[in-house]
Length: 609
Image (cartoon, rainbow, N blue to C red; front, side):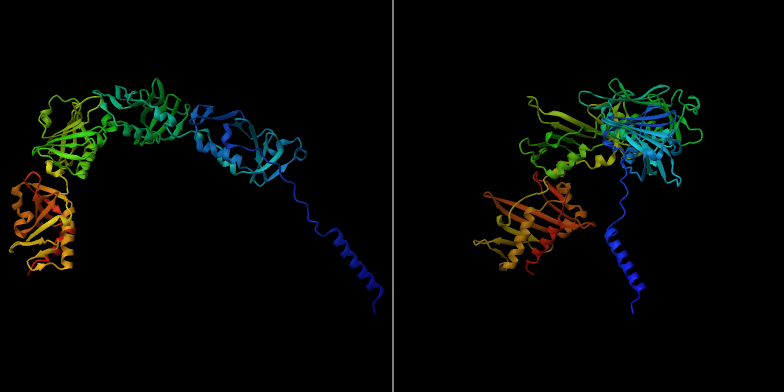
């Protein structure tokens, strides 16, 4: 039985449900109001930064070579640290915002009256000022006010890590941040209390560098100078010393300096460094003074003072015995050795090389290329003496070996012009170095003795490595001789088929013969060894022991040409000795390609038992 009370409760329940359906459905709480944005910072447009804490002002400006500190002192700044602050401000996003009506006029409670620090960014079109207050009660955020943005922002404190703890922290630690000035440097000087130690100057006309002090003037190496300037930019200060805490310049070895380093461009001074004595408490460091910026600092001694105390030639001397040249500009090479005088000439039309003295024959392009490469990279290890009056002391009055390069005629001339000449004298028995000189200097250098040993001492060493060239179809007769056996002859019949002592060869045997002839017609000598008919009987080569001989008759251009190849022993490295008669009629011994010899062995199988 449904009572009146039950009906009443049912009506109330339905009413509550209808109320909720009508007024509460889909009524979510309103989103919090969006926070006002901080001023937009365009990092590329910022040209100056100021940090002010009370009366202390720290200002930096962007120049052509990067950022510079301009107040309270002038000094190059570390660009990475300046940009880290600017980028941090550009990425800063507020966690909260307190409108003016809530903050009221009591800015002191936020640390903004007065502010703890002011950051000012000056742009090409817009300036921004950020006033930094105190930390929030939880010490994890900061109160900040920004120009053109009313109210107070609550921001993360991470960006505070980009602020300099001390002014020196934003100094560029490099002693020589040359920037674009590095390429403009045209003179360098080093002086000590006694006077000039070193002077480098670049010729404004042709760009070549010379060591003009100490005399006599010497060639300087542009690569070494460039490397030094790069190393110079890597010299860094370990510590900057304030004028208040500095000792007297006499105590620091700076009055007078141990060394003065100066770089310049024309009449403009690019860099000035005075290098002093050893630091009182740090033996590996020295005092350095930059007189342009009037800055004292300490730097490592090893890469600075010790480096500069080397001899001028060791620092910057040009070690090249032959100036740089292009291979196709060389018309002729004359080589004079104790064993032979010989010459090579290059064709101006196809750049092919020939041996032209003592006989005319083709030179090997690869071997001549190696020779030119060796000459282009011929370097002295030391300058023995820069003023020489008696070259006989070094075996250079009548040099044992000379190399002369001639260039093709130019400017209407009909004769070749000398490009370079290097003379080699005696070998120093104490160190194995060979004395040498250039034709355009009165100085004596010392070179690695291997440079002389690896120069070709006879013309045949530059001979074409392909002693002959033919196709197997041009060979009409083959005679094979092995030790203790009579020579065996193979010849082509009228049908161009091969026949031997036992008649016509089978097709597989003919294939073997033709493959061998193909290999013999195209093989290249691995290395020329010795020349002379007397060398054939040298036991090392084993020609008399093996008595292997291959004789070929080749018909080319209507002429019958005979080639004779002697095959000898193999050395411990597996190189096979071989010999033939060269273009000048003398026997020449060389190493024979093992892959070709393997094919020759297959031909021996065609011999009758």
